[in-house]
Image (tube, rainbow, N blue to C red):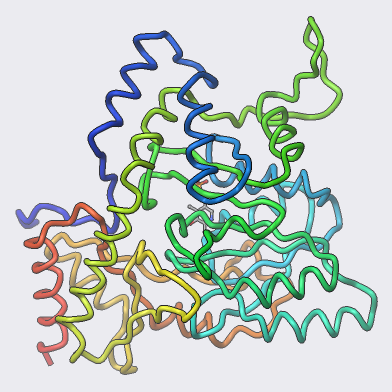
Length: 376
Ligand SMILES: *Cc1c(COP(=O)(O)O)cnc(C)c1O
């Protein structure tokens, strides 16, 4: 169709050390779902996010599933989650037989609105029906407003599992999201800020929780000389080969954050006169700008038209997540509010944001965007 090389939304960016750690796994024949890279990656990762323990898993989704199960969430329970998220935040609620209750976003961070959550919990307290858990999502590289949310969770006895899959490298008052709740979850899928091609991490200060997660992730084998099982397990551990990639990636996480923030900075510097508004950076911490997200100001400009316009020159942009209460899968769930996330979805767009984007590539995106707005 055209011969422009493709510019991806967010593509893997491999550093200097990954090959060495992977080579070590081959040289020592640790090509298995355990081994020294897994142990080191868990230690190094826990240190980076500031938790005492971590378990490397096959995906972020698996980590959310285990966290819910270990929080004792089961059939018929209710679990709160923001509606504006990727479906993987919510699906594990169904895996354990529980029902999601969806809550709208706040405009400041695009994450769950603490005010709406407070009103909702006050209403539920009156009828003595407090949900069991909250999956607290930190979207697009920015932390939710954690303190008021944790205060509410503590007041009502709700277990908090943080879905920080998109927020590695972000801060909330100098601390990493994922380190505040009972457990935190990260993802190393191919388009995340660091990747192992696919993988996830469950973090917590609770050693017994992490040990139990490791057991459940390896078919829940009891400590016996033969194969003995007293609970249902899964095959959710990370391979020692992939943990080698993760170790190398973690060494350069701060560079990756700086590069993504620089991409964002250039978009804002060079496009500030166009009728669009970038996702705000909330006052409480560092936004990694994993993705540069924006909303279009004028009703005559449709995000889908912009997306298709960029696609003509082989530039990949994506819509903002479609809220869960608008999904056929979750349409029947209770929804608290909704106007903010509906607007973010109907007006929003995510631009190519990779830490390995070249200046020329970003120029192509900027030029194409300007062309779109100057056509009419
Ligand atoms: C990527 C992602 C997940 C799932 O992580 P996987 O490793 O792909 O399973 C969960 N929640 C959010 C918000 C994500 O972006």
